[in-house]
Structure formats: structure tokens, C-alpha cells
Length: 568
Image (cartoon, rainbow, N blue to C red; front, side):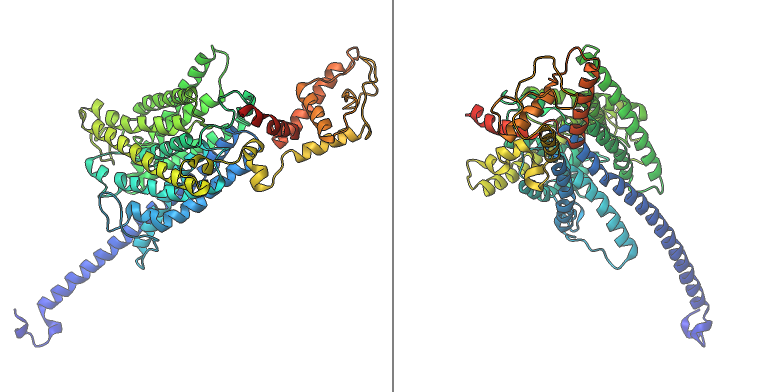
């Protein structure tokens, strides 16, 4: 029937059929939109939760670095982690996200969506924002790896500038590996959760920084005692390990970018693989430490580096392998991290936290391991088969190529960045190191005092002064016969040299006596051992609470007066 046969359009059979068809299609579209919105909301909630967990890893990195470093820098180390978030978030909003995932784009980098603000379409904005915050958490992690490598010797201004510019280095690699048109992604490189863009990039940047900064003063030349470079708090190191350990679950599982469809299967498989890897890495770290010390000690740094190395190693492959493969990958990653850090120390590269072994070498192993163990028959994941799954050398070659290119890119960019910053600060193109490093006095006394106005020796010095004043303002002369005691008070055993009027020298002698345990209590007294034990315990409690073992006024003054002479 044609429209001309209808007296009115409303009663035309063809029109009625058409209207019914349009109505059905519209209802189906609305239902699909509701389903999509629900899926998007569930996925966004998963991604946001994972992002929050990942960002708490900043605290773990800070605790690990603080425990691995010398006293007098604890506050400054946490401030550097604050700077990572401040300057990293600003840089990622200005250009980081646009370079990583912006459109339009080319295989090398994104060219649009700088300063992202979303759109007026709800789903589109929600997807953009959830992806943005997750990827920013990765970028911040890559930057903070460098913080541990340069601990106690890089200028704060230099570090802040680098924290801003390093986002560019990360963002380009993220585009190569994860963007739809990234050239490594198109080749078939697989990196599920950031072994390349996060850990290898951060490790290479840290290695370049170590080479350009040089070691801490006296670290390898014998001009300072080895005790000056011992970790200040193994407990903080272990607390940092735990925070990073659980944060890594969000790191790897969150990379499924949701839980709808088969994404939840991928996320749960990544979780089990991550835990199994740490079981293998942690077990071998304990065995290695016992073997290295002839079955006497389980060293904290071995445990920390072994477990963190296994976490880094499993990051690229956690969703594309079987859970039993994770035991192998994590065990090898842990051993690689420990042995690499031992070699780094052997060649006199100063890496206080062991980031080179953990993030660089274990990260490289993680990327290569994908080419060995990946299985494309696992549900929810798209990847070529690895060598051990019958895939030949193709994927292994791609992974090796990606690892090499990422390392070269990071090394070149970070070297240029550090050189330009060093020259700009020092105003000497031949000596960028002087522009990168803090002064000798700041290095020896600590950035807490010089940059943040915190003097950890102040309370201890006051206690010592009160102790001295309790015995009179005059000189304490060696007038008592050996073995004679006058009352059993703390300090009765200190004997001042005649003519010692300088208050600082008196405090220094008092502190040195306490440290050395030279408490001259009468040997025949019944409470001699108890008195000595109590006095030592008192000193340890006071200095531990204030972080004072190596930052007393006496040590600082002695270091500043003697070390420059030894260096001449």
C-alpha cells in the first residue's frame, strides 16, 4: 500500500509498523544504555579503589627509604614523597595523560586531551576520569623509585624539578606499551601491570641519577666509619615492605580495569600469581641470607629486596601465566634483586634502598619472563604464547626488544634532564654534579635540620646539659680514688679533665662516655652490673626515640671538623 492510498497518515499500516519498530529499537537502546552504565559504574568503582590502594604505596616507599637511610633525614624523605604527588599530579594533568592516551595520536605519543576536563556525556567522562586517576598512580610510583636512589645527597629543588619532568619520560613509554596505536603494543609486547613503564623506567632513571650524583661522602673511601651508613631503622624498612606488599595487590589486580565480563577472572588470577611470586621470592631470600652468612643470620635487607624483587618480576605477567609459573618467576626475581644489589655495592655505586636490583634488573627479568611463560589459552587475556607454551621465540624477541628500547629511552632522557638541571643550578657546564648535590655540611648534619628546621640533637643536648649542671657549674676534677663512688646517681662516674671549661666539649665527652659504655661504677658494688645496664638502657631509649644514634651534637661537630681535612 502506498502513502497515496491512505486518507490520513496516522492510519497507514506502513507507518504503524515503522513506529512500532522505532519504539522497539529505542527501548532496546535504553536497556543497553542502562546495562552499559551499570557495567561502567562497577568497573570505575574497581579502578578507583585500586588507585587509592596504589597511592598508599607512597607511604610504603617513604618508610622503606627512611629506614634504609641515616638519621637526620627522616622528615625530608617523607617530604620528598609529598613532592612526588604534588609535582607529579600537576605534570600528569598538564601533559602526562595527553601524551599517554590522548587523541589524536601517533605510534610514538599522544597529541591531544591535555589538561583533561571530560565532557558533558556522563559515561565518557566517568571512563576518562577513572582511567586518569589509575594511570596517575602508576606515574607517581615510577617517579618515587628515584627518591630512594638519591637519598641524602640531592638538592630538594633539583628533585622537585625532576619529579615534574620525569612524567614525560614515563608517559611516552606508557603510550608505546598500552595505547591502542602504541608501536610496541602493535608489535605484540605484553606488559599487564607496568613492569616496563613503571619499574624499568624508574630503575634506569635512578641508575643515571646515582652515576651523576656520585656516592655519599665517605661511603667507599674509608673517610667515615661504616656505622654512618647503616640503615637507621630496619623496623621502618619492614613496615614499608608490608605496605608495598599489599599495595601491589591493587597494582596488579587493578590493571584488569574492571570486574565485569571476564575481567574479574583476570583480576583474581593476577592476585594469586602475585602472592605465589612473593612466596617463592621470600623463601629463596631467607635461604640465600642464611647461606651468605653461613647459617647465622637472616638479614633484613635480603628479605626486603627478595620479596620486592619478586613483586616487580611478576608485574608484567601476573594475568597471562599459570599460578605455578609465578613461583618460578618470583623466586628468580628475588634472587636477581639480591645479587644485583650486591654487585652494585661491589662496583661502588651508592644505592641506599637497593632500587637498582629491585626495580631495574628484576623488572627486566619480569618483561622477558612473559616471552617464556605466557599462555594465550587462559580466559580473559589476549597474548601470544611464550616459548614454554609452544610459541617459539617470537614473543620472547618482542619482549627483549621492548625492554632494550625502554631502557635506552629512559637513560637518554634522564641524563639530559639531570645534566640541564645541574648546569642551571651550578652555572658551570663542566660540573653539573655540584648543582645536583647538597653541600657537605647539609649532607653530614642532615636535611631535617638544614631544610626543615628540625634539630634532632636539641632534646638530647638539653638532657646532657642538665646532667652536667646537676653536678655543679664548675669543673669536675679527677679527685676521687679509683673505685670510689659518691652516691650512685647517673653521672657520678663521669670524670672531667681539669681545665675543661668549654660546654660543648663537656657535652661531647659525656655523650662519648655513654656511647662507649665507659661507666666507671665501683667494681665491688652489688649493683654495678644493674647500674651499667640501666644507664645503657636509658641512653638507648632516649636516642632511639629521637633518632639520635648518629646525630648528636658531638658527632656532627666532630664530622664537620675532621672530614674536610681527610678529603684534602
